[in-house]
Length: 582
Ligand SMILES: [Zn+2]
Image (cartoon, rainbow, N blue to C red):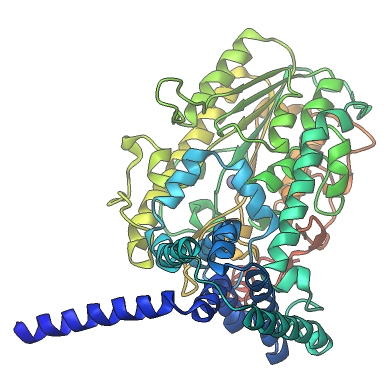
């Protein structure tokens, strides 16, 4: 015991001694701060798929940059404290390393996700990320304490040493530029600063995100004059009700209808008049980008035009439908809400409780009840969007207790070892989604109208599915689990009688590869609406539907074939194995 205590005392003296020495050594402190500032760069240098020269650039650029910034100020402790925004970005970046287990820099979408994610959602995620937060605290808190002490004691570098450091920093910066022509990225065609060198890439992405926020803010004005010139051909003998259910975080691999070995679709399995599109993928793995594509005539190939056009609600309005939008998503600041407002009747049910400030947590079936009420009260042709909360994390909160079929489903931590519990909870949320969709179909059947329904999800989800340990969605590089979504069409018997050709075309198209850009043309076409903005070759109820290479909306809003999205070999294998492809 005594020996151990003496050792402990010695080591604590050693640490105190070391800290005292460090505090009296401003040059040591300067290098310590530089290393702390460039912490994420070490991980990037090791794990980016780039050549040796590019790895050197990934280190030399931030080394030169932070050394320059901290040498330019007389008291580098003070300089370090003022670099606080850098710590925030680094912290965010370290959380991403932990989440996506790969060298993905903070993308423009990640910044936008922060803006479009409610605080309760962020809280749900952060509370489970203790490991990442621990690493951030261990890195930055001691450094900040030392910097504050140095600032207060004014123990600064001599002028001639600072000059030397500035010169050294300029050498590193020059080297990073000079080596550039020899750099290579094994994925992208080019290695670029704005894509590959941290923190230059996140500064670029932040600027891109800010520009996009401004475009979304101006959307009500920029889209105001737009008209679809939409007209409904009157061939139906009955009242028409067209319904779109937008799922949240629904992955096809967890649906029984898509070959999953658990009974997660007990109701839809028995449902008549249902067409299951087995090969469906999303055009983006983030809600704020995927849902606007679902709700508009724009897709990954012409996303830039979305800010100057109206949504599907406006098209149905022009054609004489009463349009309705009920959403169980928390209010956010994305284009989706601007689209909602174009509906005649619009309500969000996931709202902040004024007493507690927390979001309420209604189950999706409330949307069905609201739909039933509207159908009863309003005798017009109706276009109804039910935007569900589906399987959004935390999965266990998405379904009532009686849907706790697979147990245990109480999630205590986010890790590979907890996967069985996470999967149980996730699968229960799919069983509940199956119930919610079936209840909606049941309500439509009872109306005896020409009813037509599309359900699809905005994106899938990673649940520690393989050795990559991916979790959630919105990763900068999509994968099989996030891309593949369920996509189903249901029609009433009355609809089939009035539009037999549409139904037979949809059944034929059910075997073809499709993506979320088919929602807008399919729904308009199914309702017998024409507009110059309806592309028949994307309509699933048209014989003119044409199989094309499927596109993905990348981080800088360019549409590129999804197979060129740097998918990992594991994903390419799974796509092939499950016969997903063009
Ligand atoms: Zn989503």
